[in-house]
Image 1 (cartoon, one colour):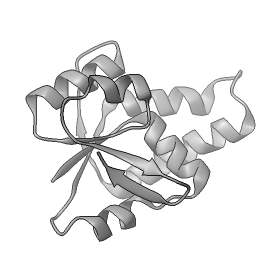
Image 2 (image 1 turned 120 degrees about the horizontal axis):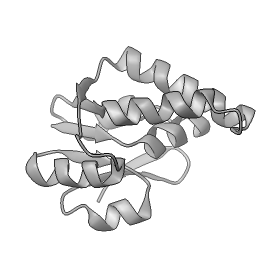
Image 3 (image 1 turned 30 degrees about the vertical axis):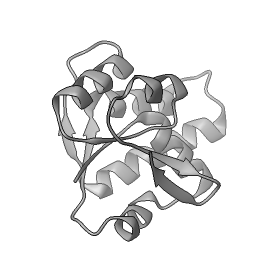
Image 4 (image 1 turned 180 degrees about the horizontal axis):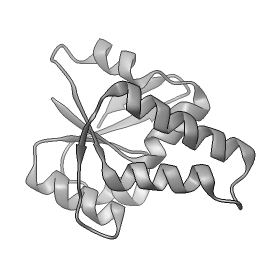
Length: 125
């Protein structure tokens, strides 16, 4: 099973201390292949360096980058200047679960979505 991570999903998990990797391993009895778009990495880099970002947001972005590096996720290129549009297009052309909390993005995804339920659970919808 391949799971494509969205920026807000990673940031929220970091902020709330949710170990989505272990939780996903508990839910699924198949090997999980994590995917992260170069564009998501770039969004996290920009947030971690932006002067207007608050300290907590910068720190969450930095920790998110470190987490993704340790996760050793497969890097993909969305080839779309709009990250959400790229994720939608990628999910339509590949068999992936999209990990996102973005309500607008979730409405556009036709396949399965991994989301956070409560403060320490993940769910597939």
